[in-house]
Length: 305
Length: 302
Image 1 (cartoon, chains in turn green, red):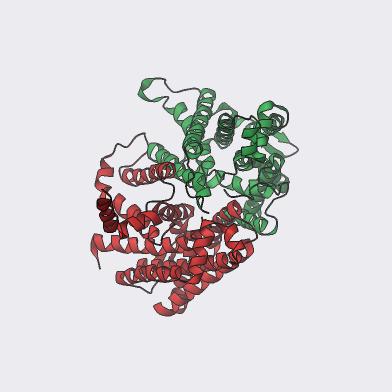
Image 2: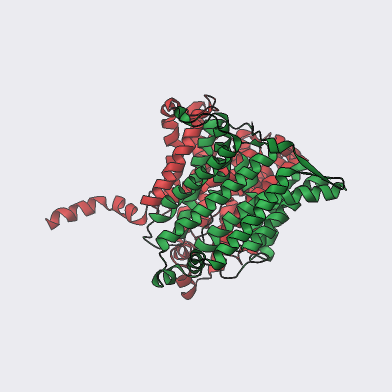
């Protein structure tokens, strides 16, 4: 029964990883860009939601908000931050010499954003954890001896809804077709009449939205937020994305859930200190044996950055 | 070698050695996001040998260099089937994995860190920084160095011209690992202590940023990057402390370190927009060398 409880916890923790891994997989699958700003934006959205609930907006524009409004505010901030990243990593970058490391420019730029977001939040709200109080936190279900909290169920349902709607967006809509054509070949997409400069921000809006939702799920589920959560939680979603296969939506869901399960199982079996080595060791093994992941395509991530 | 200036100089020299360790793979177009992890390999090898077997400095240094090289060689051999973004991910994962393992090994001190009895003085570190620079300078003059530069500029053409791209890349990665091992050993012996937090993912980020912002086209780029990003924040330390602390959480001691990293991040973003090739380029270096000549030619032209 204890094992079943761990499985339940793992699946529900996996819901957070699935949402962040989706953000990673979108930018890497379509733009071939490993966006290191995703974990800090996840952290940023949760921290701003907490700050909005606690203090309200600065200069007395708005007092302390109720928790739902605060979460929505956090998501909006995440989307704006993601659009800022798009402006300065993608839009104005010039290619001058075309040497081997030059294609890593967006990646390096995203490392710069990581420093700014992380240290900005650290300075504004410190490094200690803050409590995020919601009425949902105390509600729970008992299913044959397994204890499941209501926010966990809701967040899993939310993650599934996101995956299905994202899949619908990419497969059925006009924007989705434009996105897939950019993933295939940006130059050809431009020649075929896709307005690449206007479609690329859509990816970053989706990325920000996903990070914001993941941040809200985390804040409601665990009842606390802290400035290190991007490093500790967000980065593990990278492992989930690679395990599932870069650029694959269904890969992100399987990989994210798998990482959640592996994490809770290794805590249960070997203790909390082993999580980091187990998760990242698994990723290393996957990269050596099957770099394209479980559901990955060969064509994605094979070019330069 | 003591006091504030001396300590700063030693930290600068450690950064220079590490910058060259990261530069060697980057010079062949491989981004290493696990630089600090290879440094940790060297530091913990030296620390363990010194603490357990009381090994003197010179053999420990050689042992660190060897383990750094072996780890880097095996790693790049296994991962070399993959390219570009997979390599970045793999080096990042390696860093996270290694720190995760070290925390769980009691013989290495776990999360408490490992105290190291053997000691080196600051001038040794400075000597090694000079040595690292000299060896890289010599290496880049050789046929191997030329091959590295060719791969950096265009790997497909290099392959066509008969350069064994895979071998050169593995070689450069291994040399970088050996240098990182030396840097780790110097770190452990100079501070008489090593802990996992000094070799975490953010340290790897900073090291890669030093090198890329300094410029990867010439061998002077890493020095410029390390000097710039070690000394400039120190010079402005007093100014940074007076910058406003916004928000509710900062203690007064954190303000200047936070501002330091925020500014490093902003400089990185601005550099990637306006000058992605780094501070120093081949053309820029040429202008400095032949600056007088250029000026004279300019006068003759008028």
